[in-house]
Amino acid sequence: MIKVSVIVPVYNVEEYLEQCLESLLNQTLKDIEIICINDGSTDNSLDILNQYVKKDSRIKVINKQNEGQGIARNLGIDIAQGEFIGFVDPDDWVELEMYEKMYCQAKTLESHIVICDYNKYFEQTGKFVTPHIFREAVSLTKSKSLKVPSEQNINKEIIDKTVLVSPAYAWHSIYDSSLLKDNNIKFSTMRCYEDVLFELKSHVLAKNISYINKAFYYYRIRQTSTLRANDGRYIDLIKIVKLLKDYITEQGLIENFGENFEYFVTANIYRTIVNLKSDEIRHNLLLLSEEVLDKSLLKELQKKFFVSIPLLKDLMLNPLKFKTKLSNLFYYRKYL
Image (cartoon, rainbow, N blue to C red; front, side, top):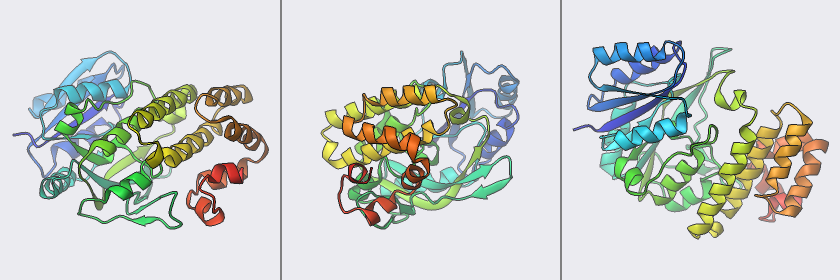
């Protein structure tokens, strides 16, 4: 029986692919399958994959035209046979005990999702940073970060308070295969922000979610990563925000997540706009933002983006300051 299916979307990563695959093939959990979706690579990535197929039958390779990692991951979900599903980006790598520890916790606690911490590896400097994103989760309705218990299921209230606020990625979790397949939880087909709606839906629908405070995953930060390289990502941002808004509205979750949603939108507009190359593109982003933000908030944001970037940066990147400085729950409107 396959316990965990690991899905790896592969595109032009010949320099990193062997390190990734070695970390998966040498897992202490042996009952795994590694589904590699070659997403139209033009370098030697496919040749490397085919060499590994000959070495180990647990590796499966699907070759397809380039459509983006969201579509590649979805294809992997469709063919996965494991009890649980995990995701690894091909330029990253994992600790050898990652999937055994997470699988055992999932079975013991009957968790639909198990989350671990991760390490950021900055390729240019060779430095490692461990964010511990869930050990002290950020909540907009608490003046202090929330202490999230390890190795037990997390109170649903904590999930509601931190979803869309604390950073979340698909690759530092495992997901019950039935949870994803029975609810048709899929990644966005866009090139950027493809995991945001996936994370929200899975966290909303999961019966139990647990956390293990070990940094099992190594996330490589390259200068040529998708978010840094794609200047058209602002269009994807607006698209995903629309989908998020529609989903939380349809599910009757506005009361639970409305404030989190507003933070997510504003923070990501900031993070995107400061990296855009021209005022014209920034202006285009703000115009598109009219579709997802109310007019009064948008008007103030337009002023702040071009008048007081340092002030906005300070607030966007330090969410807890909102609650220490402001008593009004609608902190953006009051402050801006």
